[in-house]
Every structure is written in structure tokens, then in C-alpha cells.
Image 1: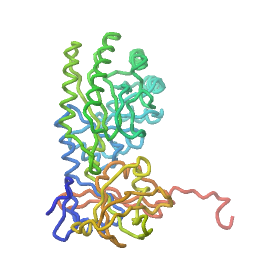
Image 2: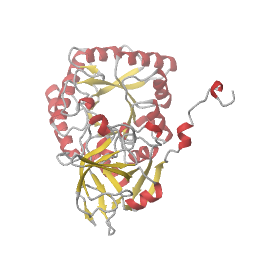
Image 3: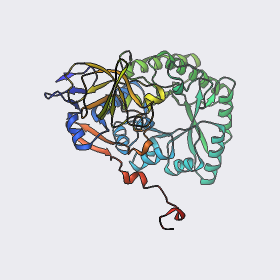
Image 4: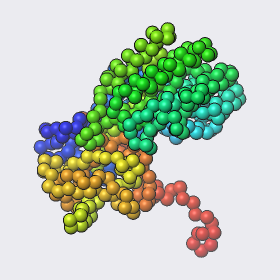
Length: 436
């Protein structure tokens, strides 16, 4: 078997891509395309690397949320981060222990918060003063208390796409530290009998490759822990640095092992704790993309091919922005291989486009691939994060199936939508029905 330079991706004697020991051509034949493929062993390995690096690891389920994924991260000892009633419901349906769930979100509804309290969710990460008011009323009315964290914006700039920066002061998320808003929130919690403040949460952005922003965020949170103790007497037990750890998509991306981040952060926390005479808080992180992103591959079948002489060669596949909107939304870049002829060397530069009725429906610009023809199988690599989570039914395209592969076995964990599914929630008013 030959390696493609990307973990967990190999080639068999037929020259076919192997995913979790399964022939990609056979997967496409059995389950159809487009097809999301998740390598179980890779997910588990990434979970373990983070658990070795940090005291508490919380999987950010927005990256990829299915019941099977919930079960995998539970078995690996991770906690779970959810940001909506739907994600919470999925976790509960999968049997995930509610006491290990962190409930995020900048605009949680009263119903979502009530669901969390009724389920016994362990930690609610409060984002704003309105949410504090909602929780005050709910805990009193339901006779239930809640352990909470406050999300704060530390004012740290991460070098990433504007749409996925979250740690800067000008952000929709959290209580700002500069100006005293976060301290005001801490004092407000003290006046609400049903709420117990356990720690602080921050998140600087996504697809971050540098260690320094995380170390700086840890230092800022430790400074604020000292300020909290000085002003309120509270000694908080946990700081949560969020996620955003970058992964490899294309040449030039240089992800670091989780241990490198962990060592840098723990050094800052230890130094600050000694400086302030504070007990060291538990350090938590929330990896999502870095758990499932490298473990995912999306398979597509080539259809039409358009040659514009001297300009570009467009190769259309049977998916596109409906199953992976990231290239259109964030200008995200991916690598692809020809799954049914991996050993064939690059012969042409093509742009891989989807089938949606949008000029912006492009998956990869200027990919170097073997000569492609209709019926070929293209594999887009490292698509485990945010493809399925952000998928839509644009142009009434059914969302793809997803399979979990391991040791040559493939199990469907999301069934392919049908045309019947697409109309299952439509309602025809009586006055529009035929013959009315």
C-alpha cells in the first residue's frame, strides 16, 4: 500500500483509494454518491491526542453532529459542546450523559434553556445579560439550579478568515473584558440564587495554526480570575479556551500536535497561578474540526466536462455547495484525488464544480489531476468538519448519506435523503389543491 501523505488515506493493489480499509469504489457502488465517509479510527485517535494534552476535552459538535459521532466521543471520554436545542436533542437521543454536556449559543431561547435544565445538562455557557435573566426566571420557576460559565471576549486577534474570528472585542459573542462588562456579569450572577458560576469560556477563532494566541488567551483569563477574586471573593475552577485548532487541508497548512498547544497553555496557567496565589484552574478545550476534519472524505462522481480553450476546464460532480458550502462561504481550499485511479499521475489542471445553479458553486479551483472522464470517482479530502453540518437542500438536492468505516467494515450512520423526504414537510393549502 502507498501513502498519499495524509494520515489514514491509502491505496490498494487496484489503484483505488482505501478509506478505513474500505475500497472507495466499492463504497460508492454500495452507498451511492455524493457520500460522506468518516474514518472511525482517525476520530478516536484524534480524541486521544487531545485527551493526552489537556485535562478536559469537550467535542465541539457543530463540526459534525450525528448520534453515532456522539457515541464515539462519549466512548473516548470526551465531554460534548452543543449550541442549539437540536444539537442537544441529538445528544440526548444518542444517550450522551447530560452532566458531560456544555450548552453554548449567543441567543438561546427560553424553550432551549428549559430543555437543558430538564435534561440535567451539566454546564450552561452564558453569553449575555438577557440569558442571565432567562435563567434566573427558569431556575426559580422550575426549582432547579444550574452550573454556568461566562463566555468572555478576550480581545485577541487570531489570524484567520474574518467570518471565523470570534475573540476580538467587536464580536457578537460573549461579555467583553475591556470596559468591565465581564466583571459586571460576574457580579450579576452572584445575585441570582439558582446559578453557580464555575468558570470562564473564550474562543479566539477557527483554523488557527499559532500557539501564541492560545497562550495569550490563557494569560488574559488568568488575569481576570484574579480580578474576579479581588472583587467578589470567588475562586473559579475552570477556564475553557475553546477550539479552533487548525488542520491540514492543502500544502502550506502546518497544524501542530495538540501536545504543543497543551504545554504552552499549561505553562502560562501555572505561572499566572503562582503569581496571583491562585489554585490552578482546570484547562478545557473544545476541538471539533481537529477531531473529525481529517477523518472525513467526500466521494463524488464526475459528470459533465466543459473545456474553454485557453481559459479553463470545468469538471462537474454530482454534489457541490449543497453538501460543502465552505469554498463558497469562506473561500476554503481542499485537495482531491482520483479515487478509482490514484496511481495515475497529474495530467491536467481542472476546476471541480458542483451541480447547483450558481456560478460560485465551486469545490476546488485549479486542481492537478489525471485526465478525468464522466463516471470517474473524485475524493475530496479532509471534509469531515462542517460539510454535513452546513449542508442544505438548495435546488432541492437530497442531502448525502454518511458512512463510518473501520477495518474494512462500512456502516451507514446517516441515510441518504429521498425526493419524498424533500416534500415531506411541505403543506398544500386546501384552496390550492387540484379540483378545489
